[in-house]
Each structure stands twice: as structure tokens, then as C-alpha cells.
Amino acid sequence: MAFSVSGDAPLKDKIIGWGIIGIPLATLFLLGFIFLRSDPIDQRVVWGCYIASGAPKLDVRSNTIRIADGSGRSLRYVAEPYKDGYRLTVRPALLLRPTPRGAYGFEQAQGIGYFWPLLTAGSDNPRKMRSQKDFGGRIALIAADGTPIIYVRSAAGKNCN
Image 1 (cartoon, rainbow, N blue to C red):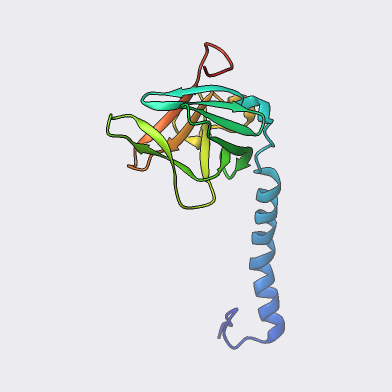
Image 2 (image 1 turned 90 degrees about the horizontal axis):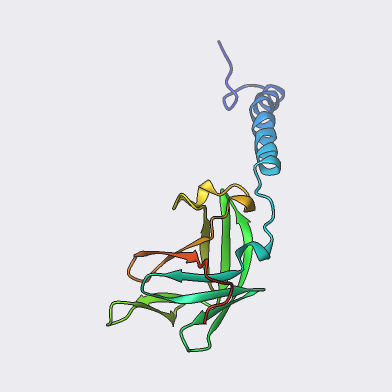
């Protein structure tokens, strides 16, 4: 009669059985945590003026995103690695909402902030960005109505006027 790891086997055999299963899994987890981490990102990589169709311009500077809509509002942000890519963690929680004119405007929302994925030049999939060198000057936001809004860094200059 064969013994199982969780059945009526002696304690010594259970420990050996769980060790055979657990040690390789823990090793794989540890190696994945060490080697699959994204490298840190330099904040200066994302600096510039970003535009999107029908949405206010965003002037991204050192630790601050100024909304160029005449309101004088701004957001604080941190550029950071996240799972399979990079993102901007922004605070406070300002959400793009559709206006009656068919454009979008930022309004205060519930929550402490939002996460805006950084994108490569050729893909809307944030997982394609593997290092800060892949950043294509694009930031993804989701508006309140579920519409994806892609902000693109303006080639005209660094400042939004």
C-alpha cells in the first residue's frame, strides 16, 4: 500500500514530501522576484507637455503635473515600476469626465489617487514597456465614461502654454 503526503504517512515522510514540493516552488518565486523586477525609472524621462484629443494639456515637471486648463490645478506624481511595466502614481484623485461640449475635463473624484500606465511608441499595452528606454512619450488614462484617453508628449516644446 502506497502512502500519500497528506494521508496516514509518518511525520518524517510528510516533511520530506512537502519539502520536495515546497523548496523548488519557493526557489522559483524568489528568483522571479529578484530577476523579473523592473528597473527604477528616472523622473526626467516623463517630463514634457502631453496632449490628447478633447482633453486638457498636461505639463509634467519635477514631481508635479500641471493641468493646463486655466484652473491652476496640479497633481503630484511618482514614476515607478509596476509588475510588467511602469506607471505614474498621481494624487489627488482627479478623473477625466466628459463635458457637455463633448470634450473632457478633470474633476475631483473619490479615492487617494490613480495609476496611469506609461506606454511605448507602438503599443497601447503597458506590458510592452520593459525599461525606461522603451518609453514612447505616451500615457494612458481611463475617463469616467470608460473611454481610454492616450496622452502623447508634444514635440513642439517642453512647456504647455
